[in-house]
Image (cartoon, rainbow, N blue to C red; front, side):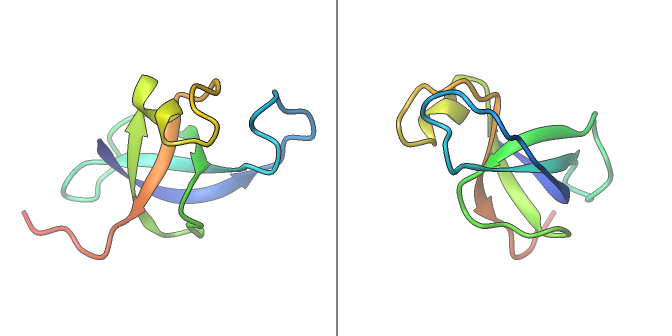
Length: 87
């Protein structure tokens, strides 16, 4: 799991089976100091995040497990909203 900040939305008119109705957001991964720590990525939103929100992301195979149905082709999923980070 890793942190990210939602910076925008993605519109996809054609989707694979299993991702109909799913919402996609642009997320900037951040470190624990909330500084950018990698390239911007597209993540499927499982928690109704909004732009500017600090979120918890899951990547790889585990991201697909966060979706219903399981094992849809996603590389990143937003699985939580972060209230605060204490380092």
